[in-house]
Image (cartoon, rainbow, N blue to C red; front, top):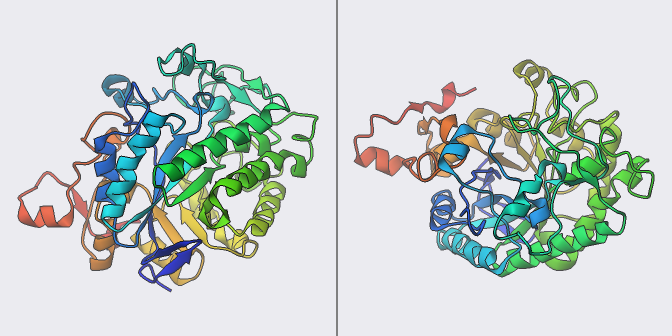
Length: 413
């Protein structure tokens, strides 16, 4: 196997194993929370024949949707995260899928409920105000976000969090229905698959983790009970899209590192027992793929470089447990990605930042061309700068673009 060998992923036939990782970009229309023509261009630029893209997190309901003034650029330049619960949002996503398909690509819609990370301010949005929607913040339990390395509680930036409301037992069925509604809209919008975001400290992990989940009903207590909502949502989604069009994303942590690898204050006392049970149980569903986040994902994780160097890849454990297609994401560079595929650690590698700054990453990896260096200041919010203005290799050859910083592939990592 190598990065350019074909692979069947559920019902999808891929020509290579390089995937666009799901990345929040905060460029949705502020009034409709829908993607724009610029969004369609962004995904189109990163499409390739037989290539697979995963969308940014797409929120299933107002209750699931965070307001993201994390970065100065967002506060200054605006932007929002997208949803897929309205007709207008669904129709706007059709622009994106058509643009991807026009270039021979395939795309999965990543569905998310942010749980206690979503803020009640979404209720003030004109799209939500007086609409009768449940609004944030909700969680497995009324457990506030608290960061062990910080004073007080916040959302990982300078906005204080609120104590969430514990979901009532009967509301779990509504959550499943919200996922189903979003999945139906995703299919109507032309997505080729759906991915369930069950990672990074959002709602589902807020149930999995005993540091947050303090329930004493059938959704709390034992590992099996805490994981129950995950499998109920998976089954609800399979009823809509089928198993061969459903992927699941997890971010397993290890007991020797979980105090540093923490997403939005979500902690586990014995994470191995949780994730070994979850990954083993996923085998029964014959999913399209399982996506694992290695312990590095931008500013969400507190994982340090020293921890990265000392931690074995997640595949060392979970490749032995999971029987289906497994994708890795988080901190991969061209060399480590090739090694992971060559050694059979993963079947697919999802690139984030390097795909962000190199819309033609697939061609560059194949040809060994230098890569554009990404610029963190333009990751979130704003317009085309840092979004659709990174040049492909052809543009670089045809024009004098001396302002573009590049790095040889063999110098990365």
